[in-house]
Length: 148
Image 1 (cartoon, rainbow, N blue to C red):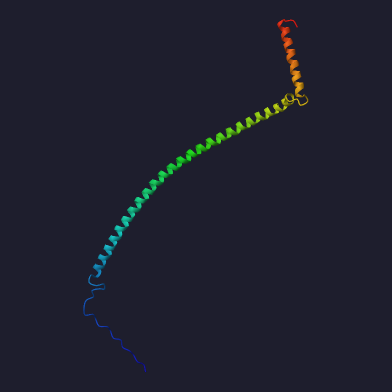
Image 2: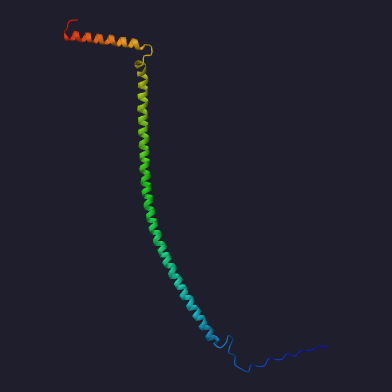
């Protein structure tokens, strides 16, 4: 036995369809969407203006800062160049002075033995000096025409 079910068709509505969403219907929903869109557009415009002002201020500050730092770099490079030049000049001066000192030290070493005679005592030097003075005085007398 096969039983068949007979489906019943739904009855038609007794009232016309007004839609879901309460009393405003589609127009009410569109008005809500429009007001939300207008509010969102206003907020977005304000945020954009604020961000644009911040961006413009940042760009202005950055440009000024870049110009200042570029000048600082230029001045520091000039100062570094001058210091490098001064250092090179100082090295050249040091080299020349060192060469002069070496030459003077060599000359000193050559003169040292004749100035410092370690083989003669003080008494002998005094005696020689006295003899030399006497002979110079005698030579002066001869040159001046005095009798010896």
